Picture 1 (tube, rainbow, N blue to C red):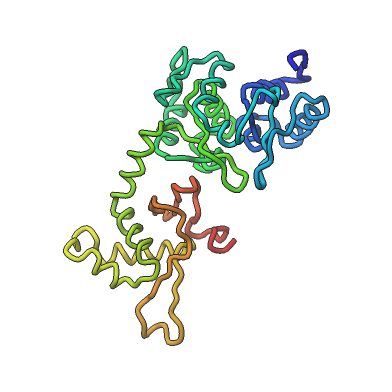
Picture 2 (cartoon, rainbow, N blue to C red; picture 1 turned 90 degrees about the horizontal axis):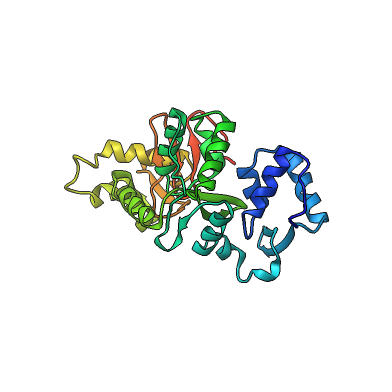
Length: 294
């Protein structure tokens, strides 16, 4: 395996990446390597034909591959990919040092933002519990190539961790497990978090039901703010108006049809709705291509 010589710099980048993993998916290669789709696909096929990359495990719609000797691996691929042992193994391969037992990544030469763009990107990913590469790109905080280089630098420094897969997309986090726990708690205690929790508990409710829930807290949970949050979540596809017949004569009765998890969807001033459970923007005012209409 080690005698293989990639034909170009982008292929070399892919080869180094897959060799730095015990298991990997094609989506991860796409997230961290800069090659165009056709070049990446052709090169991965070539590696497979040369038996330098083999299928390790197929789970639902996810295929896990390895550039290592499959006999040296054991267990579920998803567990290998997200384990602290793999993080340590991966860091050693990249000539980094990670304190896997403490769940804190520490490189031999600690990574620090070198530019204002790096700092902006670092602040953003640190504010997310988990995210996808596309979600970071969608923020337009820096040119796409710089975002890719930034994420690759975090990966090499051991500061970016796997946060699982959903619909074939890899999710990542720049937080430790302790930081994730505290961040999730803080989000649930916000005003939106408490309203979202009440919605999840009731499933079907009216504005009046929510006002009763927060009786005595009208200064913080005003009728206007509750109505606004509900109306925006309805546009984003989380809530459905279940009224029938003469709807104008009835109070709006909502049904929570999209419960994505305990963290509240966040309404931005644009207004934009982001879902921290999925690490993506799900609704932008004026745009029709949202979850609700797709």
